[in-house]
Amino acid sequence: MRVRRTRPSLRELFDAHEGRLVHKVDHYFPIYERHLGRFVGRRPRVLEIGVAQGGSLELWHRWFGRGTVTIGVDVEERSTAFRGRRRHIEIGDQGDVAFLRRVAEEHGPFDIVLDDGSHRAEHQVLLLETLWDDLAADGVLIVEDLHTDYWPSYGGGHLRPGTFIERVKPLLDDVNAHNSREESFRPTRFTETLVGIHVYDSVVVLERGDHRPYTTSMAGRPVFDTVNDLPIDDAIPADHLARIARMNRPTRRLRRALRHPGLVVRAVERRAPGRRRDVTR
Ligand SMILES: C[S@@+](CC[C@H](N)C(=O)[O-])C[C@H]1O[C@@H](n2cnc3c(N)ncnc32)[C@H](O)[C@@H]1O
Image 1: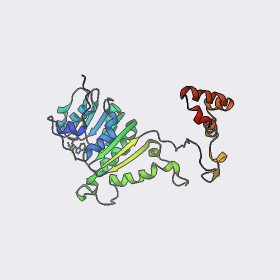
Image 2: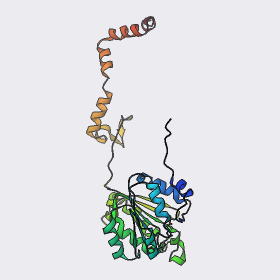
Image 3: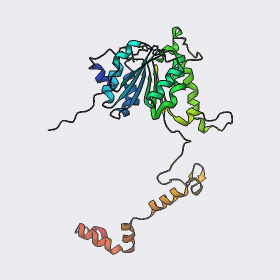
């Protein structure tokens, strides 16, 4: 009997990991699974800022599978030891826009950009502004270890201007700007390209996509004689009214039965002899 093997979860791979050292916050695993799981087996291009001992790059290759390409960025020259086939290492400072641009032009577009580097707010904000357009059409940008946004030693603090968390808050408006009826609040570059903002303890996930003004559709039949306080003919688009008319048409079998009631009686007799008495009584 062939046993079907299921893919191990990232957490399972992590727990079984015997390669280079990797250090992760425990509650990040379900977040990665939720937002990055769709890239497993899809040969993603992953840019990770912060290589350290190289363990996370190993783990991404193992989880995402064959064909994955990783680009690790670190200030530490010794990270070059982790270069390999489909594993690029770029040495530089993530606070240097020219360096980030060069990495993006050489290796982008990226399916995933993960910031696990300096954990300095100004670098996280710079990364968003500099690399957002280097994400693939359905790419994901993750900034982690945002607890530092609340730590004075990292220039953080509650509501402190300049933190990444404070940069994310206006994005909540940007993602809704298509709905604005005010001249002073119009769509931004993020309105057109940002389809999801997910905020967790210490982690923000931003999902890129083609974001247009919302559209609506209807299905099914109205129950009342008004819809949204309008008469049905005004509230329901013509194409859906036509669908409802088709739904309300008797079926072919019913139409035939209505035309020839005798056929129904004979069919009942054939299928359940003796039932005729019940039918006619
Ligand atoms: C938390 S570690 C990365 C851990 C690694 N991703 C893992 O999971 O195993 C942070 C790394 O970011 C690097 N780093 C710190 N400041 C940086 C900067 N300004 N630019 C690029 N890398 C930086 C550090 O050298 C360090 O290796």
